[in-house]
Amino acid sequence: MSLTIRRIGTLVEEIRTEGGAPEGEPLRKAAAWAVVANPYAGRSLVPELTEIVEGSGELGALLGGLAVQGLAAPAESYGKAALVGTNGEQEHANACITTVFGNALRDAVGGGSAWLSSVTKRCAPGTAVDIPLAYKDDIWVRSHYDAIMVTVEDAPHPDELVVLCALASRGRLHARLGGKTKEEAAAP
Image (tube, rainbow, N blue to C red):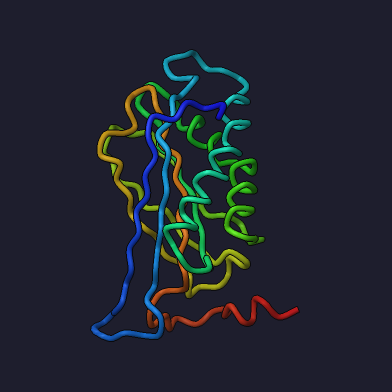
């Protein structure tokens, strides 16, 4: 691993009812994260962030695999996020989750061709992040717009990054706001 990992973790949740009623299979969500050293922390503006971008592919594969394990079901939705400590720039967080990370995550999840929703921010340790979720094969499937909140209680330190991904097994329970269905998205 080209980026130094201090710790990894996962979170799994299952939503069985919404509005007081079940609807089919429960909605499972899983998130995985890695706390890594930021090689650019505390440095003046560095024009190229290659070290993070290139190392992010390994993180995408690792975190995607951990999230798939936690989900224990086929993934229908995915999303990504990155946090940077106060001695870094938000651009360092964005460098963690570019196409290099996204493609490795897609491979670990088993495909997906839609835009991979994301969020980044600079923050103190223990700051919560809402990882946005969207249908993995078509961003316009509204029933799958969702999020999972993750808090890594002791990260990021000022010189660290937290790189996260999340998966969901289905759309929201009782989704009823219209829009394209996943069946319509699958049609040729």
